[in-house]
Amino acid sequence: MNLLVIGSGGREHAIIKKLKENPAVETIYALPGNGGMASDAICVPEIGAKDIEKQVAFATSHGIDYAVVAPDDPLALGAVDALTAAGIPCFGPNKAAAIIEASKAFSKDLMKKYHIPTAAYETFTDMAAALAYLEGQSAPIVVKADGLALGKGVIIAQTIDEAKEAVKSMMEDKVFGESGSKVVIEEFLTGPEVSVLSFTDGETVVPMVSSMDHKRIGNGDTGPNTGGMGTIAPNPYYTEAIAKECMETIFLPTIAAMKAEGRPFKGCLYFGLMLTPKGPKVIEYNCRFGDPETQVVLPLLKSDLLTVMQATTKGTLKDTPVEFDTGSACCVVVASQGYPTKYATGFPITMTEETAQHTYVAGAKLQNGVLVTSGGRVLGVTATAPTLPQAIEEAYRLTQGVSFEGAYCRKDIGQRALQAGKEK
Image (cartoon, rainbow, N blue to C red; front, side, top):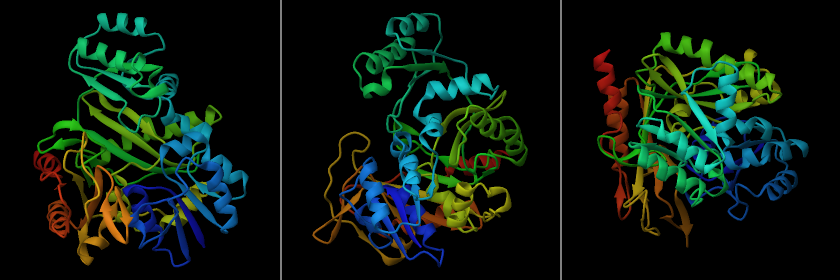
């Protein structure tokens, strides 16, 4: 089989490495891919993740048997619709279903309509109305750009003045472009956060192993938010009892709601949850695999990924076994010094053969045959082990096998989870 994976980050590299485990897979093309994926896939850098017309032409001319559309932008733009229309079966939701991430207002209204627990909120298209509403609120409070903003369109304001500045920056200054033309203002929830990715074919939903992301740049969860500096799985806060409650009050109702709206969701639906004192609530939905959550979830998947993906496309997920290892995983992200603000690129990356086997590359490119840094989050190193302490120790050991000028990683990935385990 010839496969096509659209995207260029660590998430896509993790997907590609897992797909390669199927002996029927002959060739995997990555559009555009990155230099660090070159040993696992044929990268086509001239076709970007949003070049849907070129993707379809490439897929049809290269005999692609199955395509995986991984990032949010091409999903929201209708990549799955276009490829499917050209006769290429796909993993991922169509444009109508991808709106669950592409519009925060849509997802909030969906939850309100179908009684799915989430934070109280109001939606605004008029800046004056949004600012007037804030006058009667208390902080902290959350301000969200409605559309896609590379995971950066959410501001947790510590004061009402800060919230007003966030509204102005989104609606007046257009810091997120048209994504901020509409804003959602919602109550600030407290409690442990949990990420749960799930396979679904529009009827059946199969949650994957839970995970815990580490968003802030600094040790001890300090400094600005990033795309994610590391993850662990499973999340110790996500007990069997909570998982059962989430299935009954959130997961199944969401799948049923999307079907009822005429937008059946197929692919990977990501549930960003907050375990509040009043029970689990949805913070956000993503219409695809999370990054870097994928880098700890897929290494624990025992079942064949391609088979499971095809089942979501065909609508046969209820008859397809999906099993996960009972152990743990830890991913440590190695970033460029200065990320997430200003950082330099173009530094050669050296990596031991052992570390390379456990590494998912995100921000790197080949330059005259040499792998060099080209982004903020350069790569993630993942280890699996029977216990979480072992996985953390092994991930940090493997991280010592990679180096480039200005390489930076947090030293406390997984420590919050270990503390949670002691508290239970």
